[in-house]
Image (cartoon, rainbow over the protein chains, first blue to last red):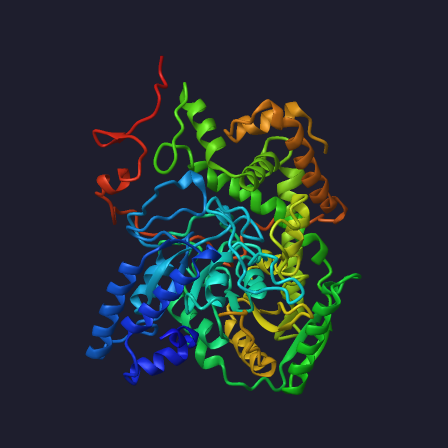
Length: 490
Length: 95
């Protein structure tokens, strides 16, 4: 039954509607595959019994004619979403044993649509990282291998590294991710799958462990553009419990996949072509431009002049917000507590033991840039540059409908690489961070393989709340790319 | 900005994270490297630019000032490392 794990979500829904197999059979196949590929370390917590119970209920609803949009589809949930009664760790030691008493809005929406949840997926600690190397629960392995060196273990990207690895390895049909500076798009590119960070406000943040609240956004990761659209249909929507969630109707994103992009203008930002850009990345990008031209769209050179300031802006804004959000981990209400001689001493010992090095580093930077005497020079300055970056995009979208860029500056790298200093690792997100600062939708899809056999992704950026155009263009690119490669042995 | 050991100790104190003395030098170097990287923003002319705190083009919605939820003391305390008599406990704070 292992071939069931190779279906897309759309195919599986059709087959189950026709009675070709049941959600229970589909779920069982995924549970077996999940167990067989445990060496990837994609899941922190597997919930096979919960999944089989949900699958049985899904089969009952389908028989009763009340099937939802994702009825019986086995998904993985990034372990940053609170799940009622299921351990939620954020891949941090400080959340030891934390069992939420409530369900995040996005995961609740998926359950309402009939989804089956296979378990909780590994990530960088508190979603801070681009390699999944900072997880307290250990690194995740990318199922893809270099043809020149198949023994080398590669990172899946991050922070949604477990999500990307699981979808790529066919141990989930789709997965939730979250994206603060590229955490859906970069791992999607590294693992040869599709993922979209919707417009800020499209999905509720309620019940998602907070990292940087003005940037965090949930989104789907799956093997096709259509599957991402089907998942986002279920995930998105206004939620009174998140004051920044947009009170806007959710269109049927799958209906946007018309295949017709004639007359659309596609922006090609010259700042995303720095000297020394990886030649293979550049080649895939140029190929993408040609596909769009062939489909009747018009490439237009644009300028986003403040692009080079996005990374330093992000590394002030995001740590500042993180230092505030992570103040709640104090050993009093949940998770780890290390005893101390006083209340302050308990806080300090708990936080020293509970946070990993990258998280500690970001909390300290955030604390510093918000501290008296430095606030204006760092934080207020970054907020101003952030507006200029957002303005760059606003102006560009006066003349173009969508923007095409590479997703990441390289293919997946090896475990232990880029670890020498924090800024080197952060450069992975150089193409995704500007979109995050501007709150725009950004989608990554696999567009080709490097000469070493690794997937390379392209990113499509859209206007606020215009995911439909992004999906439409992505659908055309997907058809042109014919990316059918899968990791060896999967 | 170059941070010395005393500055790192002060930041750690503000962040309520205990840092061992033998880590201070390393952290000072790392944090200084990050600050040097972000300080390139100084070259951007931001005169007259309003700081942007959120991309959401909306004012925060108000709801009716009414109790709409609650009464879950046991659920609230369920994850506490140490709870007694319906309360969170902490080390003694008043001498």
